[in-house]
Amino acid sequence: MKTVPVLNLRSDFAIDADLAMQMAQIGKRARAAARQIGLASAQTKDIALRLIAERLRADRDVILAENARDVAAARSAGQTSALIDRLTLDEGRLAAIADAVQKIGALPDPVGRQIAAFERPNGLLIERIAVPLGVVGVIFESRPNVTADAGALCLKAGNAAILRAGSDSHRTAMAIARAMSAGLVAAGLPADAVQLVPTRDRAAVGAMLAGLDGCIDVIVPRGGRGLVERVQAEARVPVFAHLDGVCHVYVAAAADLDMARTVVLNSKMRRTGICGAAETLLVDRACAGTHLLPLVAALIEAGCAVRGDAAVQAADPRVTAATEADWRTEYLDAIIAARVVDGLDAAIDHIETYGSHHTDAIVTDDAAEATRFLAEVDSAIVAHNASTQFADGGEFGFGAEIGIATGRMHARGPVGVEQLTTFKYRVHGSGQTRP
Image (cartoon, rainbow, N blue to C red; front, side):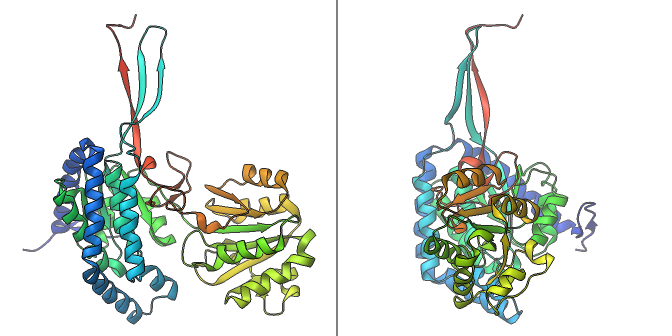
């Protein structure tokens, strides 16, 4: 049967009639599943998460085989080493994914908790109670772990999830999604509570951004700048997202050099391809004479290219010149920009000018200076004497995260189970009427 393009005025991609019908059905099934999941008991959801974790472990060989196919295809396509690192699973990483799902099950149930309660003079008792968001759409690129993390977090918070994986991770994501569906069914919950869009067609993204006829309540993008920009420009539903992770480490005059070296190296080099990786090093001019060369040398010797201003270039001849664009760049690679600044005010000004409001850290033993930095840097996560790579839901004790949000509405920072709920008011009376 010949398909007829369906115009999506806010998308660069036409949706043919078959795909439009398929996506509409996915949305309807998710909405129906969301009602069942939203009413499920905490025990039932936790059993489902345990069974999903067990299924992920049992399906290890199948998932890793599909991942090997994705990785081979990415290498053949000439993808970057950073993308391939994000894409690759091994036994350890897959075990960590299953463990994260099980840990989410062990978290307190966020649904039904009383956020606030107050009594009015007329005797009305009003409660603010946490309830699920409904249906969460997650659009992601090369990280296959997002399939399990997002699905598990949505389930714990009483939501249904519609997941759209990038073409790079599609085989792996499908294998993980099949394991999750099996776990849901084994627990007596609808398999449609976690659905992976079964097509690589990019027009499916446009359908999700349009909201699937009101079936999607919020969109979470996980990926590069191009994806996030498109989502933020086209979405007709609320979005939890960050555009870039231009994260800074500021080494202040009162910083302990050994601590600064450790924090800077971990912030940049632990995993260079994650959004919490430091992309800019700022060093106070007051300690540059003692701290700058050891920090730059440690980075270079660890395999990191350093692009610096004149002062940083003067400290080590291996440093190349930084351009204006470098201060705004999320490298997601073993590259860092470095600059010497004139104290805390200049550091804060640089972060405000070039940063992305994601995660920024200060290294200092001066408590007053740390207090100012934590108060004045307007980022979702600010850290004192700690690596920027703690920008992670698991490290925050959330079990996992569905993403990092840098906006100011509803959710900010790691989006865990509590952030995947909203609230409603329950009003208890004894016959009161309004005069």
